[in-house]
Image 1: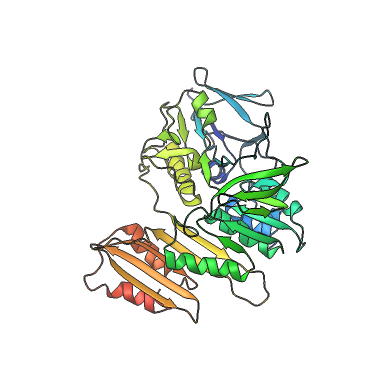
Image 2: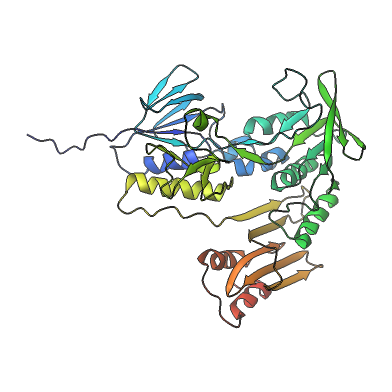
Length: 421
């Protein structure tokens, strides 16, 4: 007699307990397919959490437990994967365990970029000196919270004025620290915002008491008794500091893949099926390089996890992953009772070319700014600050990449009417 029970499929092993890895594991757990086992390997000591909300934990607005992700179905190993044996299809872990896989998914995320600052590492040192913190993980966040207790005398220098640096500077200022933010570029959040929008963010931080320096290169740090006590700028000016935060961007975490002999450029190279150069290994999230791009953002990580779940669970119905058109959103709370936060959203390319059509509206009284860029008959980018009523519809029009009406009337209506949705 032949049994009707399907035979178990080869196990799926996911390395990485961030948004991408957890999303994939949750999709398997909710599929109702009992033939697919999934094992998640995560090295952080904390339960999986939403990294996007770390700045709110740092500011004290949210507790660390509030940003936890839903429980992970299947087996969850709290250990570090140290080696992938592609021939035997097993993962070797730091705790001595050996985990076999049929399909291996690398969701190893990214590491913070540590700038080549003079004096940052003393000879033979591999750890950051006392007083210097990255801002990438829950451990980083809790260490910063401990170092910057509600004490107006704490001097903080944040190096890097991108999305991460702005979020960290705002959070630390809300905690009562004296914050100096240094940005090598000519404006804050230059990858997401145009000059006018960046100026509004600059003003918001200044209103919080943050001292912002753009076009300012940090040359090195100076240590005393094993701790960094000052930050030296390229022009020779020295900033005294108790806490220094490195917010200089992130780099895909590819060491495990490189050691296994996979194709790695900036990230782990994947095709439209999110396959690496080994057909039994996939990669998603910050560590993956698709079509020459590494996005290192939450939206692509989640979309890749969903696309891979579809491909593994329902291969006949799955669609190839074609990339993510990501929208950046940020809410800057100022910590003052009764005062409104600064909301911002940016998508596509907010910088216009000479032949582009630009619609730009600013209201200094209300503190709002809206700009969209139309190239030919397509909406190619935009940025909104202070009033985000229209952002959903604008983002959908951008994501669809459909031709706009010749007169542009729906676009104008969205920008000029708060109830445009």
